[in-house]
Every structure is written in structure tokens, then in C-alpha cells.
Length: 302
Ligand SMILES: Cc1cc2nc3c(=O)[nH]c(=O)nc-3n(C[C@H](O)[C@H](O)[C@H](O)COP(=O)(O)OP(=O)(O)OC[C@H]3O[C@@H](n4cnc5c(N)ncnc54)[C@H](O)[C@@H]3O)c2cc1C
Image (cartoon, rainbow, N blue to C red; front, side, top):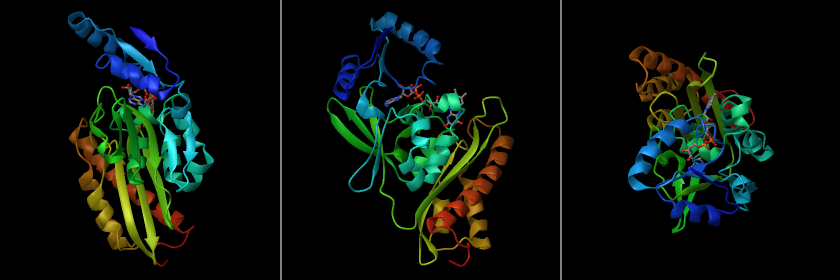
């Protein structure tokens, strides 16, 4: 096994290109290092056949990947190697996207948050991904770079299946771009953790909405840990658009959220329970986002 620690994006991309197929990006390492024995075993079998050595490309020393900047148009650009803890406590994130900050603050124990990175969260492509769900709700995009160029991918299109993203082997997720906040726009995140010692996400719901003339004008909802991968719940979001959070609207919303939860690795019983939990979380997140959208106010009347 070989370890490389580039200090620029160009150097990192050149390493990924040169060792395409045998190189792996190493970010916080909280997932990668725990699975390294497995990776080495799998890789060494392939290695015997191809003669290639596993190459870890550690991106933590690349300054551009570690910064948080506010663009002239108000968009926030977060380097892929920024840790969850750094992002959760950043004043601009807390002010503009409190729901995203909530998801970051809830994305694992303190030791994991202070080590794991935004890029690692997304590229790990786990179903229980609080951060991915929160980013989907606010319609964030990933900037993906390689020696042959760059592309911008909505976070909602990045994860294809558990453990698999649409990134090619020589591509690096360099930053995550959060749109400039619009007037009366707000987000919220609600989650329940499992009771195991690891406290992993049992179910999580992100809601982002805008309110115009007392009604919800736009809305995006994303779910974590209730399907194989985090995903948007578009039909549920559409139940809120054009409405206030009145009891009949919330009842339809609740049903759509439950319908969007898919039995995956869970038993049917757990899946049914998660659907119930997720629908309650969704209502709670929608209420908080509504209140935040104009600095508070009653649900039926504003
Ligand atoms: C005890 C425990 C509790 C946890 N609880 C939660 C929780 O409640 N909620 C939650 O959401 N998560 C939770 N996690 C998951 C944890 O947050 C992940 O381990 C973490 O997201 C991985 O990030 P990392 O930076 O350490 O990635 P790494 O381990 O370094 O990498 C993970 C994968 O992403 C790839 N990768 C990383 N960065 C990039 C990049 N920039 N471009 C391309 N590929 C890249 C790597 O090659 C690797 O395949 C928990 C983990 C543990 C161990």
C-alpha cells in the first residue's frame, strides 16, 4: 500500500489519474480506515492479478479543500475536506441554513464529527446520511473535478446506490455549493437516533421552504435512513406548496412521507415503524422551517 499527501488540487488529481483504478481518496478516514482491512483484502486479491498497489490519496493537506467562502452572489462554498464540526459551528452556515447546521451537529458523536468531512459524508453514500439529506433539501450542488475538467452535480443526483456515487474513479469531489438564501426561505432538520451505543440515525427528515403571502411557495423534503439511500420526497413536498400548515394539509403530507419510506435492509416491521417516525419528524421539521421562514408566526394565519 502507498500513501500520498498532495498539497494542491492539481497534485491530488494527477495522483488519482496516474493510479486510476487503484487509488482511493482518504478524507477524515472514519469510514475508510475502519474498512481498510476489507479494502486491503479485496484489493490484494485484485493486486495479485493486476500487479497494482492500493494508493491512498490523503486530501486533508490541500488548503482549497479546507476552506469555507461566501461568494459575491451570496452562495456558500464549502471545501470537501471541511469537517462536519467546522461546518456545524460556522456562523454563516448557522445563520443562513440552520437546518443544515442541525444535521451536521447531529451527524454522529463528537469524535466522529471533528474528523469526518463533508466530502466523505457524501461519497460514503450511506443510507443514514443526515448531511446528504439536509443538502438535498436546500438544493446544494457538488463540484467534481478531474484532470479532464469539472462538472456540477446536484447532491440529489450524486448517490446511486449504497456505497456508490456517480463519480468516476479519477474524480474528486472538491466542494459543495449552497445556494444564496432567498427571502423568507428557511430549512430545518429533525432526526431520531438508534438506541445502540453508536447512536446511528434511525430516521431523519430535512425540509426547506419559502413562504410568500402567508402560503408555502416552494418546498423540498429529503429523507435519511428510511430507504437504501437518502432521497428527495417530491410528492410529499408538493402537498405543502400553495398551502398553510393546516391540519388537513399536514394529514396528506404525513401520508405521503410514510409512502416515500421504502423497506430496504430493514424488516417490514422496522420499515413500518420508521415510516411512522419519519412522518412525525417531517411535520416537526416543516413547522420549524415555517416558523423560521419569517422569524416566527402562527401556522395557519401568516
Ligand atoms: C460511531 C459512528 C457514528 C456515526 N454516526 C453517524 C450519524 O449519526 N450520521 C451520519 O450521517 N453519519 C454517521 N457516521 C458516518 C460517518 O460520519 C462517516 O464515517 C463519515 O461520513 C465519513 O467521512 P470521512 O471524511 O471520514 O470519509 P473517509 O472515511 O475518508 O471516506 C469515505 C469514502 O468517501 C470517499 N471520499 C471521501 N472524500 C472524498 C472526496 N472529496 N472525493 C471523492 N471521494 C471521497 C473515500 O474514498 C471513501 O470511499 C458515523 C460513523 C461512526 C464511525
